[in-house]
Length: 278
Image 1 (tube, helix red, strand yellow):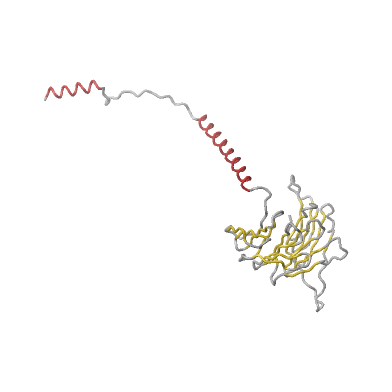
Image 2: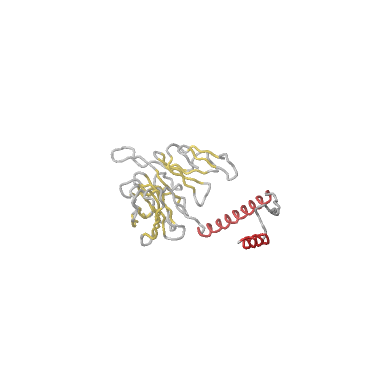
């Protein structure tokens, strides 16, 4: 877990953090390397990209250097909003709150970006890497999503249909599709080949994160439903048995004949007497 000031690591069977790292102030994002699980990247506002090795948490293994000063010799601000580890390499791609996309190479002697690109005029909020690893999908606060080439830094296309700020992007690991969500309360699936909208679902609340599952949701839901119904059935049967065991046995008693009750023979005699009197 990463907070504004620290990165904490827990074991699965422990409630106390095993490691706690001071990652600096105003951290906006933390990402774990899918290939090397012991490596994580952090960054935020005025807190440049850092790569940490959880096996050696004393200091970061890589700290990015700020961009060169502008033509007025003024320091250029930096604001890391999201990052991702590029597959089959040591490189890391980031997007910033100043509509920039940077690629860093920890194996390179320079700590500044090896690639700089810009998209639009609004802050970038999320990014995700498709399966090919040569492109990156970025989204900004005005609902614009674009596909950028990481080799040349050029925009290869844009995805349309969003009406609010993008909060999260997730590319499929094998299919050429990307899922997006944001402040307009819709989950959308776009194709990266023809850049057309394939699916759109309204989810009622403002969305902040989206993740793709490696399992079929119908199978998972069916298994959970069967297990839940089995448990409910067993619990219901157990409760019924307990109720029947606690009930007292009641024997049926024969009803006593009251003075008002008469037999069929007595009724016939009364009718005969009435006829004789008439």
